[in-house]
Image 1: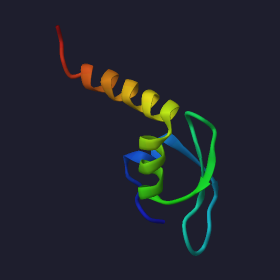
Image 2 (image 1 turned 90 degrees about the vertical axis):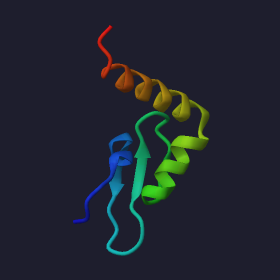
Image 3 (image 1 turned 45 degrees about the vertical axis):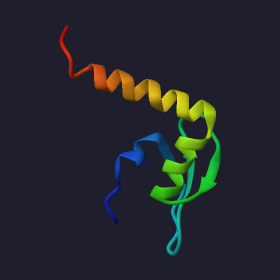
Image 4 (image 1 turned 180 degrees about the vertical axis):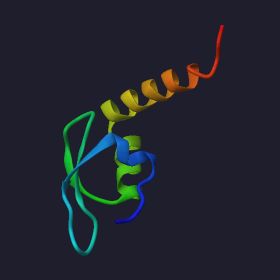
Length: 68
């Protein structure tokens, strides 16, 4: 089993394949697609609803480092 980067926390593994990329489902828009880390990042960047949700989560995460 290979290690997964941070983009994997935004998808659910639908089908693991012996060769090639797995089938995954986006946690934000429920779209199912085949792809590895680069495809997941591309999806999060290109799909508008996923991009907005990801940016919102990133802003919340970033704000957790500041104590005002």
